[in-house]
Image 1 (cartoon, rainbow, N blue to C red):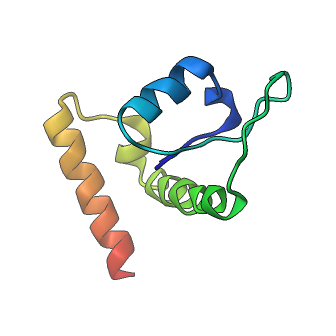
Image 2: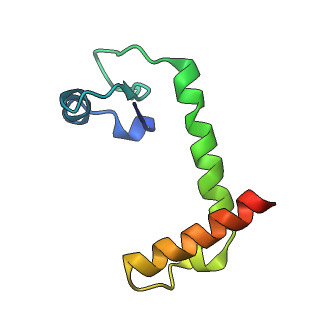
Image 3: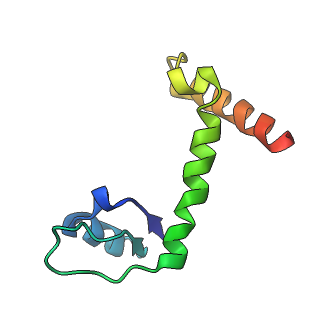
Length: 87
C-alpha cells in the first residue's frame, strides 16, 4: 500500500502504483472529476508516519541535515529513532 496526501492524487501516479502491484490510498483532490474510493481506516494509519517524522525532526541534526552524505544522515536518523524508541 502507498499512503499519500491529496497533493499526490494524479492518474499517472495511481497507474505507477497499480503497475507495481500496490494499492494507492490517496484521498481525492477536490478538483478531480472522477472520484476514487478511499479506505478511511487505512488512510488514518498515515497519521502514525507523520507523527514519527515530527518526533524525528525534534532532533536538530535530523531537521537541519548537517550530514553531507546519505550514509551519515541515515546513521543520525537511526540514532534519533533509537533514542525515541528507548524513551
